[in-house]
Length: 491
Ligand code: ADP
Image 1 (tube, rainbow, N blue to C red):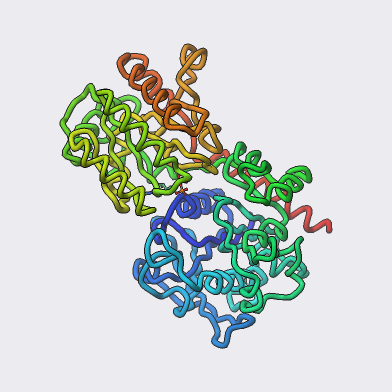
Image 2: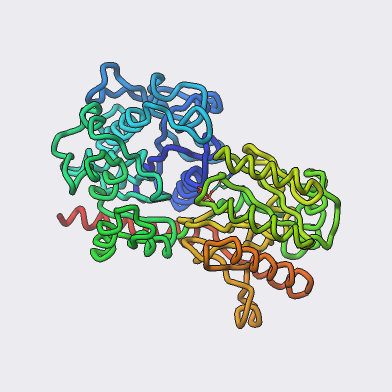
């Protein structure tokens, strides 16, 4: 049994902007089920305090650079037995709005101060400097918001082993040099092999430089971030870590209870591989929901996404518009929010093709489940994708993922063509070039296959058979935790 402190800035179902939240719940739940003492630590956002029924203050901690002591509140992650610790600094976290900004796209002006405070609290708990009287063997940090924690404890005796997981290298927590001084961080951390990144302060580098091991959320993304195209200037450092054996790609798992077409309470009709024909009721329901004609022969494409360039939303809009102009028998159902330009482009597409395109701008867990169950194909033409969760949910729901061949999408989908289709390995569709034309051609390919219901059904069943539970991946983390502990004890 290991004691693990799992630090994250978002945790489903308390606060979520993307896949990080899902993983920050489902991985600790899987580790807990394997008998580990895992505690999640996250900021005490207003939404979290409002959503939790039982909370109690279990410690107060005085942090460097802050006048008032910070409270640590304890509760349990809803739907589980996993302990959560909330860092309660009302000035930083108890406000209306999202985790990172007043709206889904924007940033709070004081994010550097907010997540520096959070990281300091994580470091204090990791070093057992609070009244909790609990020291973890492992501190597992996630993304830039937690990046300063490994840096703050790197030189301390009796520290836990540290692991830093990159969920998306595109978001790095970069701030002007003056911010470093304002945050009162130790001078020793300011150098090019420390937190400095071309004269800027990089929270992400705290995790990359100072943690014992780096992981990212798929094997292919682990390779990609060591290259110029995906590395954002950090590729040299990451390639060095890979050479040292200190960078590993471990594919994310999914919560099989949350995402189970057999028991999903949000969808019209439950189904499994054995009753897959019942999936059709969900197609009717989603067509009705979006006010589209109920047609069994129209291929329904689903899209659920943050609306940002990374996700290839522009490619989807261009490709679908061309195909609809050509009269292809398809429908598109979308749910997303993000950049205003993409939101507007989707509204325009809906206005041009009101009987072919359905759009909901916003965030809805319920509708996301209904789209997963109702669509025939799920679109993920991402320019890059560290892991991606929706293609994994889609596989489980027999909704064939149509993805770009990158990151975790490359690792989890087998293209329905050639020998893979013939020998029944195929689970979806894949394309290489990040262009609307390549996407268009692949959508056409999927429409052609849809006209062969027996083959389609075979691919659906193969998709539904795939095991993306945490079983394998949580074991990879456990092995890593053990080897890091052993290495730290030797040094
Ligand atoms: P990312 O973390 O880059 O956004 P992932 O595919 O890893 O991408 O995870 C996205 C998660 O957020 C999925 O669980 C997806 O269903 C969910 N999601 C994204 N946008 C919405 C939305 N508008 N409404 C509901 N869920 C959403």
